[in-house]
Length: 302
Ligand SMILES: Cc1cc2nc3c(=O)[nH]c(=O)nc-3n(C[C@H](O)[C@H](O)[C@H](O)COP(=O)(O)OP(=O)(O)OC[C@H]3O[C@@H](n4cnc5c(N)ncnc54)[C@H](O)[C@@H]3O)c2cc1C
Image (cartoon, rainbow, N blue to C red; front, side, top):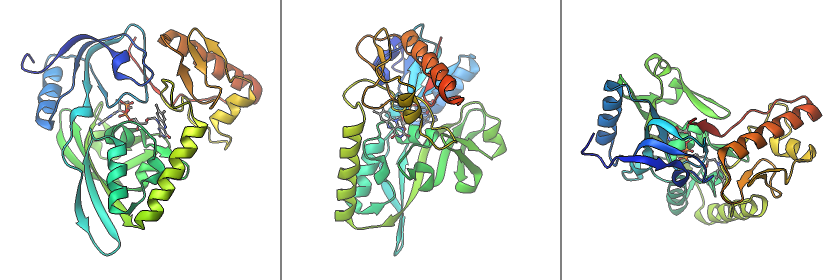
């Protein structure tokens, strides 16, 4: 793997929006699918464990870092382009490394309906697909029509919507070779949008963005909502707030005063502080409401 720009002992706090985490033994950001394929098969051959990240906006890396190879997929960008169009619909393809916001802007410029809920959601297209990103009434799975996926050991597969099961937060494939694979990688996604009114869409986008900026601690490092919303209907943020946990703190990790489902890094927080706070929140919410919160943020490393 010498020909790649491989970094050793790379601090993961530089690659996550929480700005927390020890070093990855090895870190690399391939710039093409061919490079990615070579890396994945090299890692398989030498039995090096692999962790995939996009922009790291939904990941907490523990303080002792990640063993093996971290592959950052944010460098895999082709064009965002229209691939099909009829009177009412337009299909658009984007590579996994594009920012979701770039896809959102593309949709706005072309007057395409269906992505406005993503206004202000950071991260890559691949991360959004993998996490089935959602906000308000929208979710990314509503507009996906195809995915191109790299399945370690089985090559590149195209999955139609019927081959994919999206849970409230995440993607599972019904195709057996993907289901049995450990860690499929999203390479590209094709979305189907309705044609809409550019002016109305832009106004709605700005309104959603303003609301988000008013209700979320966007100026502090975080990983977005830390816990999934329980099935019971009351949001995790509401439960945490009602349990009196806003402002609860371990070290420099704090439950945001602005939005109780955000754990923020006040500066130099350690993963261990965040994990203690997570446990405290889970216990107190369970004591108050007998509801077990599930973590939405992916916890990696050791
Ligand atoms: C301020 C803030 C606000 C947020 N608001 C929202 C919100 O409203 N709604 C929402 O749903 N999320 C929200 N998030 C969370 C996050 O932005 C999304 O989940 C985002 O889509 C993650 O993308 P990413 O590229 O950063 O993924 P990462 O955090 O890098 O990765 C997340 C997971 O996806 C996997 N992954 C990433 N890329 C790929 C790929 N190409 N193929 C296979 N697996 C992959 C990783 O292995 C990891 O398990 C917010 C985060 C922040 C910091």
